[in-house]
Length: 315
Image (cartoon, rainbow, N blue to C red; front, side):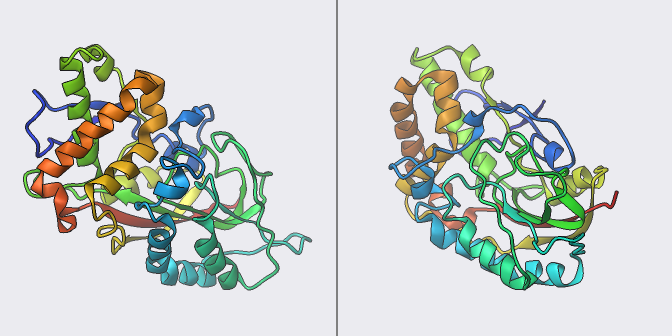
């Protein structure tokens, strides 16, 4: 386990909060790793006010922002399918395509339309309901795998055929940013940590409880991500691009930002701290967002969107 902590621009907490984070949780799976992560790592599912349908893809109106992400990635996806994808049907007339990372479906449609139109062949796109913390699909059944904004699934290398492609749209961070004037998603995490420390000071739970809280992800720089992917025995890197971040201006209010962050983290927080603290925690979180001019200006967001295209090695 490794620590990733960014000093928050707020000063309401007594010390920087450090969450233990698993640096290569799902990248290990992409590279042929292990199974066993709990489903509590996922976003809230469903259509309720705190669910994924209302809060996914970097915005409460999740469909619009996801279309923005896909449109930015579209020319690159089309190019790699045309020039890099090896289609060997081995007697079958179907092509396997999968989108990993959506629990309610709406986010898949724009990406799948682009991918299927680019392949321009008979398509078999399986809709598999279930826990994607284990292997979902038959061995060597996918020619193209796609995942946008999520790498929490423990599946990938075994399902993709030799010569098949995997396109990953991943949130990253720059090598450096000034937390007094700029922010990234880890800055949000640290702000949430300061709220947890405030609640510990008020006696709602112990500081030890905060220190033992684990967030199972890591936001890498492009250089770090490339280094991780290059260690793969299953895939080669065909290309990596830094995309224009279409989500930067899509959380216009602190209420929307808090709702998004709650949808992503509520299951983990409830599992560790209990459901009774959730409303209070995100009320504090929203108040800290309101008090910080850094978070109120979306131009200060230095989070990055990285597109990595991987090719499955033969054999």
